Image (cartoon, rainbow, N blue to C red):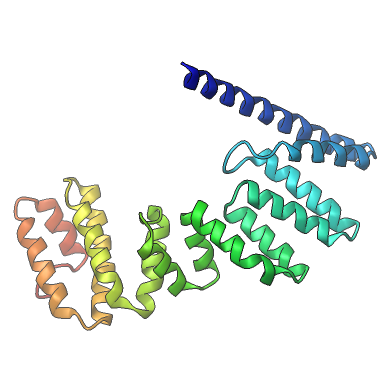
Length: 246
């Protein structure tokens, strides 16, 4: 009962904080428009001090933007960096990382902040960290991180990583594409067969690049035989040129 009470109390506290942040943000614009930027800044600071309501709180993000932009407008790059650092520490994620990264570069302080910032991203926002690494063309690091992680990144990010890795190291991605094909064919239905076919087309390209033509043909023959009672699957594979020996 005590644990339940604490949980409800915590949820109520988060809702109240969220309401305060929202109320603060809603008056920032009007106060600015009527020529009271000082009061707008005071309200923005008040709301920002409550911290985010979750991994991505739009009001908290808006408040951080207002404070950072106001600091830059008065030529205080250090204050803008402090705001970006506080926002990132409170809610590590891709958006706040990008903003902190740029602010730190502008102030010449990224080298001092980089190690701790990247470690926090890797620990608390692993999928978004893979996206950041890919955006920075650090494909090898993204691959090593994903391979060593307890679980794979989210589906879309994993697909992007496989494609990027396959461009330089095609052999590395073959078993992973094979897993995607096999997982698609566990179920029946045209949607699953279309997905399997799309993965197979990509797998074929990377297998050729890795000089694994014979391996791919053997795998394709296995799938073709397994689809004897799935005429729709064979029809889709044929349309995609995925017929053994062709």
